[in-house]
Length: 186
Image 1: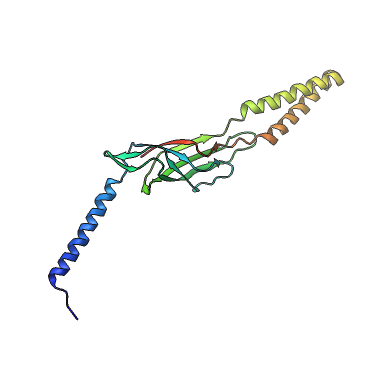
Image 2: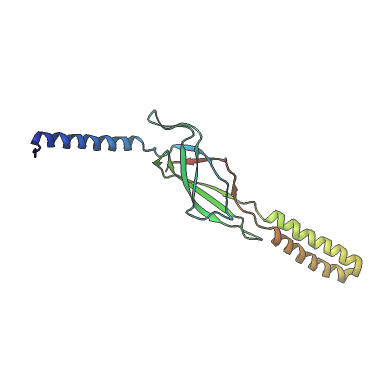
């Protein structure tokens, strides 16, 4: 059995130390600086009605991403992120909300601001449905029952309009597949 000389041990430790230093320098070179704008395209559609907070999503980088003049992620590189907030829409109020964060670009971890969207507001649609139901009810009530019939028809029409608004009222926030999303590194 042959024993290792002290020289061999020193060389082995020196090589290991150099490899460690190279890894640390490489990792530092691949940090994406604060304030960098990153534009991506998501792969799949997302909706506040089905997404959950913490859910992962993925996409691709739209443009080359350079740090200190060196491209660390070419266009088309894989990006990953999480749903940071997802709230489903109510029926008569509160449209859905959906917020995304980017967590990595080409395997490089990042912390970004949120990309957020809200569902369409309910107010205009609900006013039209309820107000329209009230007007139609008052008109028909007035025709068939006079003044008292108009009041009863208006109440019944408003109720029917409210039911119609509730039945059709979910306004989820949606992000279609292949949507261009812009994030800023924090």
